[in-house]
Length: 310
Image 1 (tube, rainbow, N blue to C red):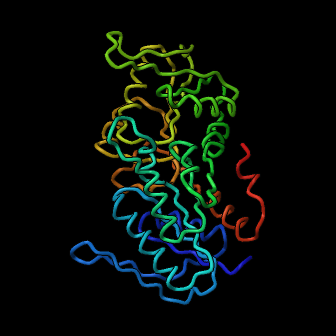
Image 2: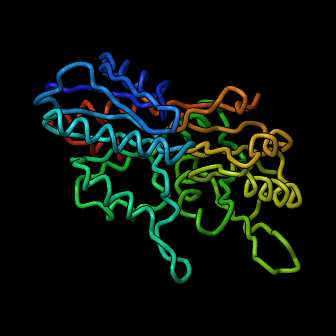
Image 3: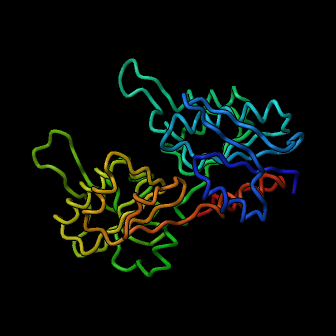
């Protein structure tokens, strides 16, 4: 394996520890301090000259603080003569701002990509971007890993495969729901919410008497999950599960989800969830081994093809 160094910032240290364990390595020492006025100071405690460096940082809440930590760390590594700077961003913040939905809007996801490149990043490794085309915002290699096989494996391991239907919480999530349906050999349904429609929310597809799995790339406020659960109950489902890669959980999401009739909420650890936001019916699946394997293959100049296979 090439001379590599792993660094963890404050965004998701538990996941960074799992990645290091997968590689049978220790995290390299670095101190990340915040002054009273919010300024960030980073000190790399040992030489990284000529090393291939991997910085692990989820750009999650607090989003701007975590992003600035990452940018300052990249600057420090470049000035310390790192051979290559690779950033592992399990959750890519601002990914939803990927287009102009109305006039005079910024495309912040592209701006973030520009800033990372200008700061000297050589490669980005991430998990389940909000939209696949975000890879094209970069002019450097982007390894876009998928958590779907891990989520699907949970349901197959638990024997939740009979009389199942994969449910997209809206039309934009159909592609992801179809992928889950292919994994489980199940049919597909879509929650159809039309703004201004007096008929409210309906379900496209046969879900009556079935076990429904609501699948999305992220759970943010939980409103879409809440709406989907109500529509599925109305349509006569037997049991409901929810699954997502990124547990953003903002704006009272945990209280909202706690009150829903959901058997299990299956998420990954791309975002470090505070203890108070962990729900009794939550299952957390780690992407640490997936990311660790990606780093191992990249560092030995091997193909990542098998990691992209479902």
